[in-house]
Length: 406
Ligand code: FE
Ligand code: FE
Image (cartoon, rainbow, N blue to C red):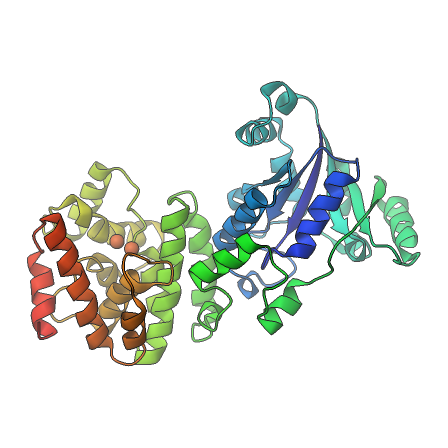
């Protein structure tokens, strides 16, 4: 097959990106296009973009709903340690075992998926002019033919840029005609107007409240933000989409609430992000991890992931701060004498933007001004849920409720 590869931050994925894919597919040069969201961009400081799982799933949903046959999205960059250079990503993506499995998972027949493929790197004509400054252009050109998009009216510098690339590094450059809207992620980011994004992207942004002041993590240190971004990549293989995005949302909301109530935003960010980190491990593994943190304090299967998460955060995510570990340990039950950090993570877990188990608008509003009142409202929901399920409250939850005056 002739495979087009389209790398980018997709922060957010917008109609201009979609037009590139559509035009490339229509050009006759490629049989399919694989979009590869960057995980740690080498050009921008990677903390300047949304954490990678958001951008990956956003792009995936856009592709699924695009109606474009042969438009796929790869998560290959999650497997790269450190900065994701194109040359490194291409060596992984074009690996015969990887690409064959990837195409088959996307519905391509075993025969077509396993043949020898040729690869095209899809890029804007403006990017062609900067290509020579990329990391190892000569290596990139061994894997791919450059396929540059040309808009009607683009000037002749494109030909000069192309001649310069092939003259200096060899390889081949082809052009295809780009039709469709011209929009840019930076314009979208600065205006906050997402009209230029596909419906699926707008819906995704809405569900997770992305591109808000909260998601900028402005009150966190650069070190904590990098930790958050790195942890998000590490969590990717550990949790399925819904839970992974939930945990990132909890981290972001915790950091915001920490800002409101004068707790440490860095600690809140990491505690919130890691609170469910072992929830998809098998139950015996969860029990073993839980016992190592809190003995047999938690017997209920649904609670094991909380102390278990504390052990795992300590051993696999390098968290040594006891306040963070306790916030993870008690995020499900609460307890008596909760610290501010514990309350924040407890609450953020129950009301982060993608939560829909009940109408949370009043609690979300209360959370901005009166933490204990929001805790009381949340506890009432929890108790009602337990009663409905015929489950007994953990004694620690009773202690928390007494403290709250319930
Ligand atoms: Fe949980
Ligand atoms: Fe949770």
